[in-house]
Amino acid sequence: MPNTMTATWMGVGAGGEDRSIGVGDLVRVKAGTPDPDFPDLALDGCTGEVIEIDGLGTRFNYLVQWNDDTTRRLGLLCRDRCENADVALDRMWLFEEDFEPPPL
Image 1: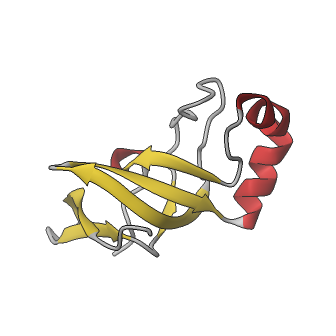
Image 2: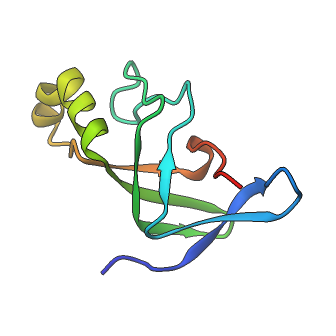
């Protein structure tokens, strides 16, 4: 069963308020973030929904279910590689620093 906790965002919003990411939140990957399984593949702008959170202390991992556009894009780039490596194409674990700051 997915973890339903909310993690503290690493940083603050423009107005100084704390930001957080929780299950069900939509996230976008920052430019320059490589795929953890295929470092030559950039995840710039990939978007999806956080479906699980795992971590202790201040370091959290987020399981992101990619939206349809991102899944199609990644499928065009690496479907065969994912199948050969037995890696899911439609979801991925990432760290919170891989995401763009959430909008205010």
